[in-house]
Amino acid sequence: MNLKYRIEELETCLERFKTVLKLEKDDVVRDSAVKRFELCFELIWIILKDFLHREGLTCRSPRECIREAFSIGLTPDGEVWLDMLEDRNLSVHSYDDGLADSIYSRLETYLQAMEDLLKGLKEKVRL
Image 1 (cartoon, rainbow, N blue to C red):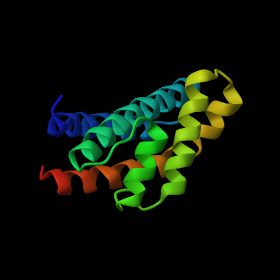
Image 2: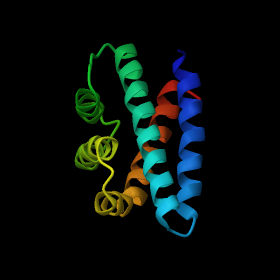
Image 3: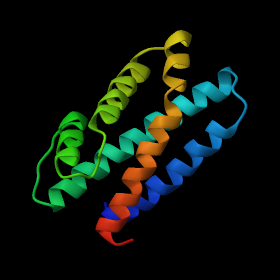
């Protein structure tokens, strides 16, 4: 799929993520926000894989793509991205309310990092 198209999809995904984070928190909003986070994260690592391939770099997993993106300065705070990866891995394999609340408390930080990445990608891909 076209990299520019995926970046446009990410923009839409992040807008929906941002919208749900503005709602008053309850269990449904929390669960929706966590799911939006997961969807955005999945799209981002696929975009990173495609973008890095275009730049002559190879990554085969989300962790490798995050490391490569950090190494070229696309993600200035690698620690936040590794925390994101860990939370994504936990959230897709667990249905624990305590874990969901914990992840929800970090979603604003994650959204900001994702928006920053989107901005950098758009500049590099010329959107």
